Image (tube, rainbow, N blue to C red; front, side, top):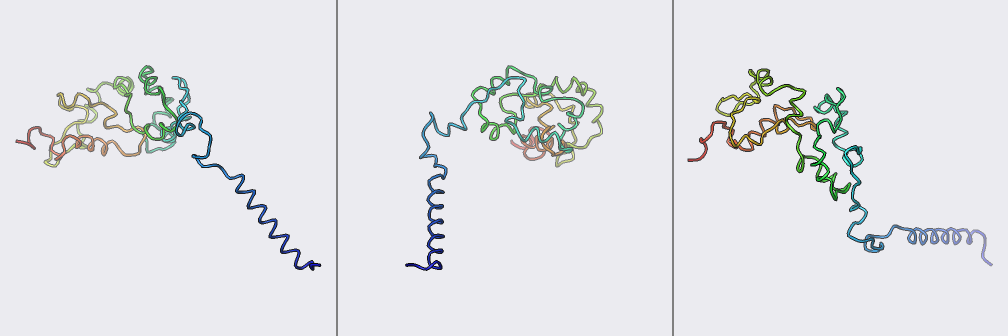
Length: 203
């Protein structure tokens, strides 16, 4: 007959063994072991049920969070009662952009405007005409190239190359980088030698 002192360790070992077996049996199955529900990563591929009145933060996280960041322009706009739809007003384009979209897409793609735009007229409806803005920034040296040439950011020369330039080209609403930096970066994306005069880089 075994002594009680020898039975206790055996009982404890048995309990540990049973607990380990139970944990293995209840462990989550790997993706290859889970039953298929009709596609790879099916849970991540569930389409978003989008409507124009949907709550954007359901899928988009960075943009709503920037509303509470005083360094972001969207914070100032939100404080004046504006909502996402105030600026993102093209319902048709937004509907198209959200077709087949998933929550996973929002995390990967929604940091920059790709399929939709913010209409310049929407910005100007509050901020005044480009002429008014140009008067306000007439003395700005924000856009000064490597040769000392300064361009008024709201009175750029009108040409084919500038045709796609609009307010959001320089003014980033959801990032804290000041416009003086984003605007110069935008210019240098074409004026790669940081020289604003045309026909000076290539013969």
